[in-house]
Amino acid sequence: MHLSTIPLLRCPATGGPLSLIEPPDSEWIETGTLRSIRSGATFAIRDGMAHIYVDDQRWAPKAQEARGWVQMARDLGFYHHGDEDLRLPYFGAPPWIDIARQFDILLDIAEPGPGTRVLDLGAGRGWAAHCFARRGCQAFAVDICDDAQIGLGRARAMMAQSQLRFDTFIADGENLPFANDSFDFVFSAAALHHATDLQNCLSRLPAYYALVGAGSRGTSPASTTRPTKPNCYKSQTPRASWPMA
Image (cartoon, rainbow, N blue to C red; front, side, top):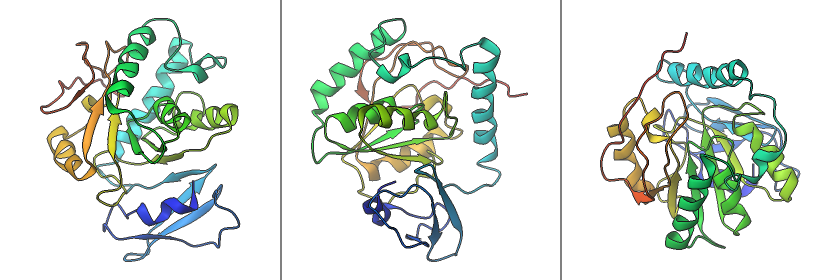
């Protein structure tokens, strides 16, 4: 995580600022601890990724879903894979052909570039944040799963390949750990239907400016099956649920 990101961070419990306990020795923080100035609660930074969430009953189903994604990948045999995913969304196979086309349309509309601060909400492996970083944006990726193969931990391999760094966070998309007015726009791809309270989630997003999404026919265990074009979401996304044993 970049040291310069800390002033943007807020405690998800109190809304107050966070500080870094250990004195940094560089602009990039690989390992450390963030502390809430108001409550004293601490949040770990591991492998450059900040884990900023409140481990309570609201987080429990999200943690369960994160474990379910990993288990599903193992059960279906795609947990262990090569480096093809480092090219996402330009993978050249369904459903990524459609996703890449829609993503390119979004880039033409939004024109993100140097100086643009972008939040990738429900980032998965972080491919969109990686693309924004390659365009010179200050990119932030938020997800609930930190797995190194199919979660946001995979962003580490993307950064190593491109020699670019962007900030990654394990956090609750319905209780984001950022100050208001932190972003120029928020990007979300096939993620809003995972919200436990979507109306509440959307009500918080105006403080983060426009939510821009690129959706496609989903293959996730909790995805809508209705393809969408890049748009600014103005109403609820259909929610689908799945049991987590």
